[in-house]
Length: 158
Image (cartoon, rainbow, N blue to C red):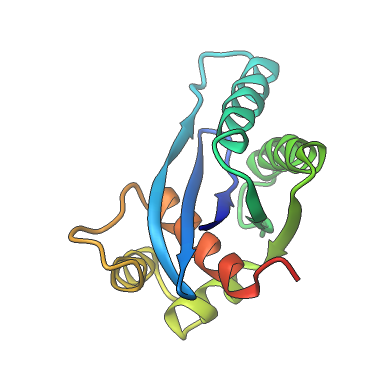
């Protein structure tokens, strides 16, 4: 089976989703979050993210890893911190030797939901449907990461 990893970057929560590809159909493997707490110094939060991602990267021989690009909203300070976390993620993936794919949020939503402006609930519903799950994938960061993994699997390792 081919494996694909999707990453939804964050600082407090980094979503991850793993899908396998069997007969060209995505199969749910695992999902969850890497969690950090605000009481830790910023540098330690980045180390938690790096260490946990490196453990996830060792689980399978991924054909490729997809990561959501950042978009900035109101809080630029938070956006900069998330950018640092994303940098740690990108570096770890690059160091692992896996093919890296980056997607804009609207590109992910458009490919998974058919609407580039789909909300979190729509994303959860479509991921549930596409992966034949009994329940909505939670939390929403993990559902987003599964969507990224599904999109990544559609592109394969080309």
